[in-house]
Length: 167
Image (tube, helix red, strand yellow):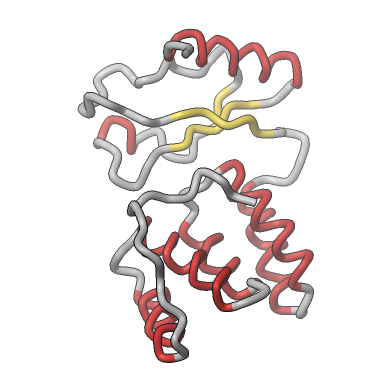
């Protein structure tokens, strides 16, 4: 098992080799120190070591994901996904939104739109539950959950964490 320094160094080396940036993935319940770094992009030589200095959580789980600075931005990926859904191109929407979620798995808006592009009610429920795990106060997700429950689609027991296996 690698320690955090080794993982950080490996991620930095991959970013340099692939000419990519590092995207800071911060969990929804992060401490205020980590929260200041939510969704930030860093060049490998500028990326702070994890856990961030001053982090208030003993078991901080912030991490980096690789991001292609020559590709679309996260906001562009989200917008493309939304436009594809609105145009009825569900497969294209899924491609855009899943790509975004592979980088930023706590993107509440992407999960919500992905629920609209889901192929079936079970997948839709999974997306809605991810939104609720990120933000239990999300009224749209709560309405979606009630609508699915009214159709007899119910959630299996969950651990309460956002899926690590997006896509």
